[in-house]
Image 1: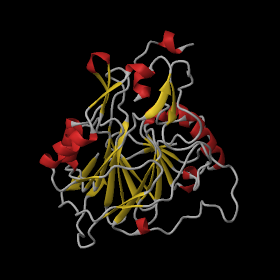
Image 2 (image 1 turned 90 degrees about the vertical axis):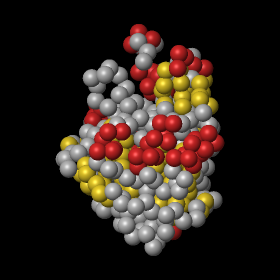
Image 3 (image 1 turned 60 degrees about the horizontal axis):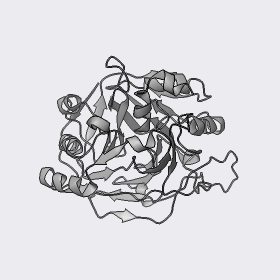
Length: 346
């Protein structure tokens, strides 16, 4: 959100292809919250034989379960079927200030500034970057992570190439919307996100990540999407992660969408679970902090979604607390997203 706001400012101020087969939605099973917390502020560069980076055996390893941990801002740690862990848009080191703290400086509201236990950066099997701005492609976090895990596979928007190419990551795959790639047993399909700049600029990315017996998660942090792309390919997702509360500038300029747009996204993807993300909830200061307002509530979204998609469950995450989403094991048919175009790597 803040990154788009900064992109709108003049430089003078800042200088100080997939197809799928539609299948019935899976039935959600009861939800389970665990109490183990993941916190964030730094990445430990040393490991011992007893390090927490050893993959844990959890119920999320079941083919019919997904475990999600919200790291605030736009950050997530997912554990998919088979125990495959995906780190998404992480901010694990310091505040979010885009290098101009006098203009904007934000800190996480809930997660304490203590060492992560377990460390999200060291646990990950894949790093997923949706956008090129610092609230998604956080340079301080990625600099530390690349120094200690240069071989960590990365999937990113090509817009982030200038940042990532300067870091020692050795396995980076850039996906245009419609392209896909496979990491281990996980398939990542890029979808179109917002255009953060002039209309001719390449859009940023959303993703549908599919693992296990075709269990899929859709994520795009601005609730901006190409409805025609999703509709024409009959794409589906078991879990939809999206903002549902709009974030606006004066004159009703939308920074982050939600509400009825999130309902329409759910209509298209037909998820079993919708997980609202509160990426506008942080402690901020600076000249830009007072310009952003919100519209709508999670409760209003719940009511709209109940009319549009009554079988979908809305599940609110608690930052740092793993959230287990389970599906009815008797439902063997699930969403299947397959790509028809290639990806680029560096």
